[in-house]
View 1: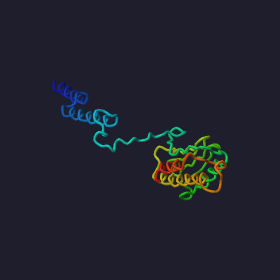
View 2 (view 1 turned 90 degrees about the vertical axis):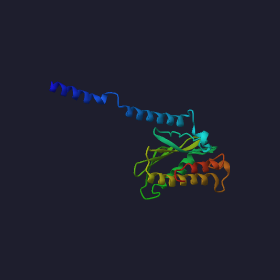
View 3 (view 1 turned 30 degrees about the vertical axis):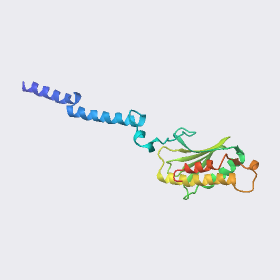
Length: 200
């Protein structure tokens, strides 16, 4: 009899984990569910939205744009009015190949997939810069889901220099507009590109 009672007690104790939790646990779970309901209202715009209380929260965030490659993020887009593609690619490719030691020796490894693209891979392999020259725009993408802080700082240096090179191509020197390698709608295009750099 004692043995049967011990088996029943053991079975009840073991099955307790599968039974309804105590009332206190249910109350805690209800509070957790309430918290997540409120959180979804905050993000999805339920009954109470933060914009009713805080006018600063009405700012519209620009959506993150995907880059050309899977997993890449678009950092810069420079739409062109006119572009002499061959000359511009050559000039920019030489510049990008020349900055492999910026800011330190061996920081970047440059490679060309084809004539329309230059890839710069950072030494810690946490990210890469992909510069693409298309018919009507220049795009810069970041490939890497978790770039290091040193990568972001080096990327900022490289891209700031690249944007300034584009500015020189577009606006400096005694070259007529029809003979320039690149013309833009306005200089604000390059200012916007510079503002989108990580540590600009």
